[in-house]
Length: 462
Image (cartoon, rainbow, N blue to C red; front, side, top):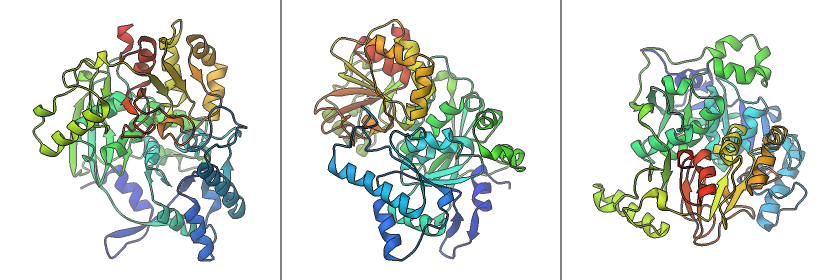
C-alpha cells in the first residue's frame, strides 16, 4: 500500500522512532507570538538552555496589538506585559521579531506564507491552533502547547504520535457565490466539530484544485474547527506560482520534488468523506460552535428535530445564549456589528471581495463595520489598490494596524454584552468576541452584504 502526503512528510522528518508510539519529529519552522510563549522561555532559563535554531524561529506581535494605530500602546496591562516579554525574550535569544509598526508584522498565520517562510514538505508549529492554515502549501502544520514550545525551542524537535489520515474529496465546482469559508462550514456541519479528531484532513478533488492559495489557506485554517490535527493540500502549479514570487525555496535544487509531493494512488485512509461542491451555497452559523451552521436560505433549526441527546442539549443551550427562536429565517436576523478580518479571512483576496460588494454602497445606519487587515503588507496592498477609499466611502472602519482584533477580543476590539455580529473569523464560542457577545460566522461576501442590509444576507440579495 502506498503512502499519504502527510505520511511522507512525517517519515522524512522522523529523527527517532519512539517505543511508546511517539516519534521524535524534526521541525522546520517554529512560529511564535506574544501569547503562550513567556513560560517557555522561563523554562529555558531555568534549565540553562538556549534556543537550538534561532534561524528557524520567527516571532510576531498579533493577538494583543491595537489596530487603531501602530504607535498606540497596548491598553491591557497583561497584554502589554506579554508583548514586552516577547520583545525581551527574542532579543535575548536572537530570534527574529516582527513588531507592531514594522513592515513584516501581522497575524502569525498570515505572515508565514506572505514572507516566504512556508513551503511544501515542511513541518511547521506554533503556539496557536490555527497553524493549520499553512497546510495549504503541502506542509504538515499544527498548533502546540507551551511545554511543547519549550521543547522545540531547546531541541528543534518534538515527540508526537502520528495522526491518522482522512481524505475529504470535494467533487465538481463551487458555485460563483460560494467560498472556501462556506465549504469549510459545510464540512464541519457534515462531520461535526469532533469529526476530524486525531486525523490529518487531506483535501482533494476538482473543487480544491480550482481554489486560489488564499482560499486554500481559509479551508485549512478551519480544519481545527472540525477537531483535526491539521489540514493539508497537495502542492501544485497554483502553489508554485504563489511561492515563485516569495519563497527562498525556489532556488533549492529539490524544488521540483517538493512541488511534486502528493499521496500515492493506492494510499490508505482511515476515513473518507465526499462533498459535492455544486450543491453548496453560502452558509452562516446560528449557534455557539462552528458545526452549528446552516445555509443562508434556511431557518434556525429546532432542537426537537435533533436525534442525538447531547447535540440536542447543546442546541438548546446555544439558542438560549444566541437569543434565537427555532424556525426563524436566517435572513431575518439583524446584526449590530460586522467584522471582516482574522487569520481565516483577513488576506487581500478577502478585502477585495468585501470591496466588490461595498463599492457604491453604504453601511446600514447604526451598524458598525470593522475591517482589520491580516498583516501590514495586506494593508499596504489594499491602499495601493484603492480598497481603503472604497471602505471609507461606504462608511466602514478600516483599521490602520494589523492584528487578530475582534476574532479573539484581546485588545479594545470587542463586542458589548448582547451585541450580535456577523464575523469572518473562525470561532463563535460563548464570549469569544466579548462577554455576552453573539457571533455568526460568515464569508467576507456575506459579511459585506450584511453590513449594507443590516441583516444576514448574500450578494444576490442586493
